[in-house]
Length: 337
Image 1 (cartoon, rainbow, N blue to C red):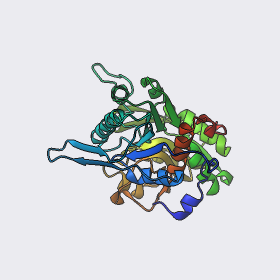
Image 2 (cartoon, rainbow, N blue to C red):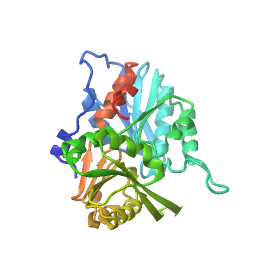
Image 3 (cartoon, rainbow, N blue to C red):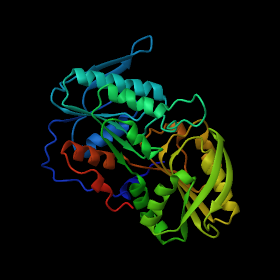
Image 4 (cartoon, helix red, strand yellow):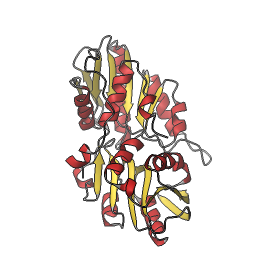
């Protein structure tokens, strides 16, 4: 679980001068992750906007903005995590409300973009749901998107509006360095071929070699391991992925790494989806540590002793500040390979 020590060891992005004018910047959130929204507000030194988002008796979303938004730069903070359909609907209704309230600009901050794994048509008569969700958000009135570690980077092209794509790799990398992994005989492992760019960037940041788990996935949730490319014998393996859902992929990868002589396996990810009994399976596994960020709320029953949660609010808050002030966001990652 998250500790004070973990929070202290994450070096936040450098904040600009306190005299920056944030008077027209307003933050609002739905029900997906109000805790993260409040941490972002605390980072920026502003109050959360007043908004009521509840339900009518038949389950329909009831929303009311309780303060003026006219001419303001609005940021809606809402990861589209489980229940994804509920949270996506809240985003669409919030967008409609602020469009009708004459907001100058509305940026949707989606730390975790749901439906991202449905980003292409693999079999006949399959939808491309990631594109559908992008169309819905755009048509509802969003001017800009801010998100973290998309499952597939090409999803940025699904939007007809600007997208700022943030990477949590540097946050994870700085924490690993503070924990002394930069001095250990370690290798950075990609759990699949698609994650190689992310893994290579972390490997270069820590100055470590790279290994790749090559696998095939016959259907969602099931993985057939094929081979490991790279030398893992006698090394601590740090596996990095964009998300951990059921945990099946990282657990099978961990078994293969240990069978090939790895001395330790640490799993890191940005989005702790933790579906079903994933927390129990990870706790009972040979994995020594699981390191993630809080882009998705982690319920009390999903916490376990091997888990360390790093804060996403400093990076998101700094990106919001820079967007509001029309400053560069990409320069936050000038040292990220």
